[in-house]
Image (cartoon, rainbow, N blue to C red):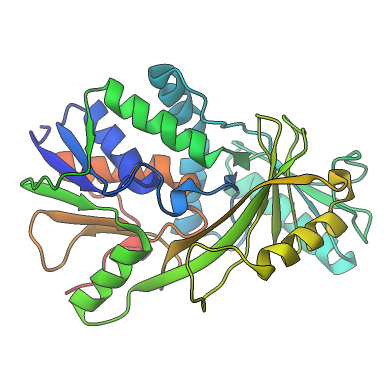
Length: 343
């Protein structure tokens, strides 16, 4: 039975997707957000929904598979309700293979994808992917069809509008409720650690940029730690840095200039694309590198959903489902690695 009144704190991708799922199931949900939807790390530029490798299978990878498969239906429903584009597209991903050893490993992973991805997607070693691909020293690339892309800012706007269309409320005013879900990003993750008396995670700064290059409908590219994401609106996102030590969380600097230079060198298909936007923000990273989900160990009626780091958008559809199952129906499907630590 749905709980009559739930407050979700935080309108990032975790908070808003959970609120949307709860509202769709009949709960009365208020999202408390002091700024605006996607004001934190969910309002970035990149939007690479990319899976971990299909070998060394574990519950985290299985959860991610389920979420990436569910993403198509999730975002289509959001777009239908909101009338807005999320920028979601299941265009896959291309990665170059550096040498013979990398090719051998990729072929082994191709076999494991056939088993672990259960026919829902493929991981293929290939030659001649066309001009939209980074150079490959080995002459081989990996193409996977599980990867997708999304436009984070458009997706957050569409999700907020879909939530409102279902009757949900987003407000800057504090609203307490018998049941609360705290999805408060890096600041909340570090506050949780202070409350528990030990570190449970931290914030990692990322910088990314958007360039004027129309490759809509093409696969995302990944090489040397850089994501190239061709959005459907005719722009390409490039990201991102990963900075554990920083002084200013929201200012871009020379590290982003370096990233741009590396991207132009690694991905000649981009030419010398003009920079349209630059972004910096702090992403919440749990110590386990998996999201933290479940009841707050010290606060009855409070649940935590945090620690999305680089995979928040990819994990969000399934996290919304399991959190709604837990809060509304007391059905606990949270993987062990995702569980909140004891108080």
